[in-house]
Image 1 (cartoon, rainbow, N blue to C red):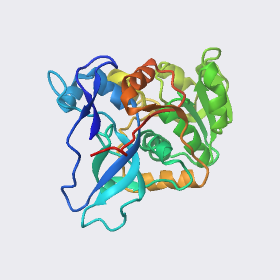
Image 2 (cartoon, rainbow, N blue to C red):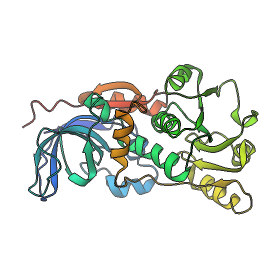
Image 3 (cartoon, rainbow, N blue to C red):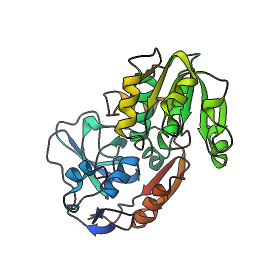
Image 4 (cartoon, one colour):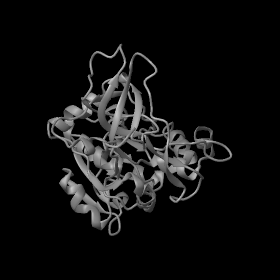
Length: 323
């Protein structure tokens, strides 16, 4: 089968399209997925760069060991193990796995879910990791309820585009922060207010927020607290903020009513089903920036690395000729 293999750390040129043995079912609860699309995530960038250095424990040290990137997937079931009863061959599915930039991937049936019926299957590949991260931030950490005021900093990115929509679906008043060029996108997602960070600083505004989901880490903790309600919650959620920023936020929470909480988004039972239901109800739709073919993976990573994407970057994979 065709697959993308990372050959070195550093920049987007370190990927090759190679022929690898076709993935095979090994456990009774496994399914073989014919991959239609994969979306790139911030985690893929960390693996590409090999920074933080602990990522090299996964990818390989001192250089990558036949590492296939990709965490999100959408596709159709090609084969199923004998213990799989809820899914059948031909079903359209999506999920958060690993090593998905290939024509086929094997997964436990418990790790995937039927894809939304009202969405092109390729677009379902944009949902899993970013959708789950946004869901956990809004639902589990932020505990957003109707009438609450929520600010999403970095509202036009992968997690941010989902967070705006999920917060609206939960009944919140939502403010999105983004650049000038992306304001129309964030408005189209349902944001009640949109702030252009190139012109206005949300930490100097008059609005107060019950929850700030901070995907950008572009302001100090004290500045963010200034625009929180007395019992407001600040959620640092940027891989660029670093542990010192997060630790400082947690320590500060010990001395003020305003809290700071961080989290690691891992798929919980029911998460993918809830995201599917939100999509099928018309409350959430993935924002797609661009779609690349599998052999254009370096261009896709370069675009992701620029940090200018409006929503998700998809890799379209054609497994029709797979052996």
